[in-house]
Every structure is written in structure tokens, then in C-alpha cells.
Image 1 (tube, rainbow, N blue to C red):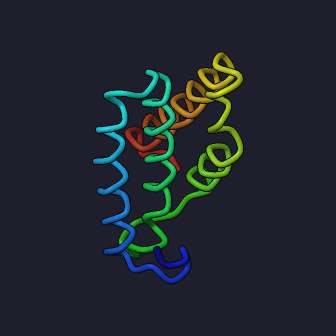
Image 2 (image 1 turned 60 degrees about the horizontal axis):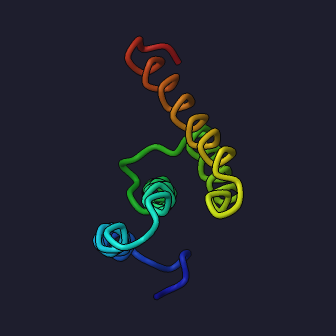
Image 3 (image 1 turned 45 degrees about the vertical axis):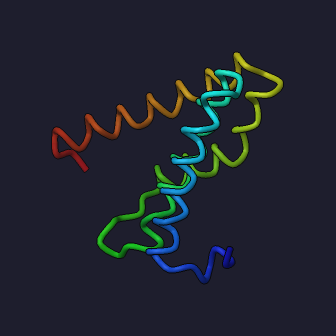
Amino acid sequence: MKSKEKISADDHFFEILTFLATSARGCIDEPHLYGSLRLIDALSKLLDLPKYAPCLSQSALFDKIKKEIEEKRFLVVSEVQEFKEFIDKIVQELAKEAKRRSTGKT
């Protein structure tokens, strides 16, 4: 695959589609925790979409979550409880952002 800096929006979108399809298949035979890892990886890929689609806004929150995913996603192999807490933290951050957006506060 092309380097991340040079792929088009279409290529990135296709990469996500392919990743999700192969992940769905992998989840059938892999340990159940790998499903969570695959979903976190998919979230990471989706957080890159604003780089390819100018109609999407990038945010400091998205950058922060992307960085956390890159640093902590492999906790699933060694520190399951910490991995769960890491996912809980992401969910809480996104819930706060959803609330902020629904009330129109900036």
C-alpha cells in the first residue's frame, strides 16, 4: 500500500472497508478480545478521515484519541483491565463531546 501521506481519500476509504471486512472474518475464529482491538483500530483509521476529506473537521479531541490509541491498543495482549479502562476513557471523552455538540456549546 502507498505511504499514508500519499494515499487518496478513495484509497483510505477502501483501506477501511477492507480492514472491516477482514476484521469481521477474523472475529469468528480469534479470541473475543481481539474484536475490541479490531474496533479500536477501525476507530483509529476513521480518525484519519479528516486528512482526506476536507468537508470533515479535525479536532484536538480526535488527535488526542488517535494518539492514545496508537500508544495503548496493544494492552489487550498483556493488560486486559487497563485495556478496558482505556476504552472506557475514550467512550467517556466522546460522550462529553456528544453532549457538548447537542447543547451547542463550543
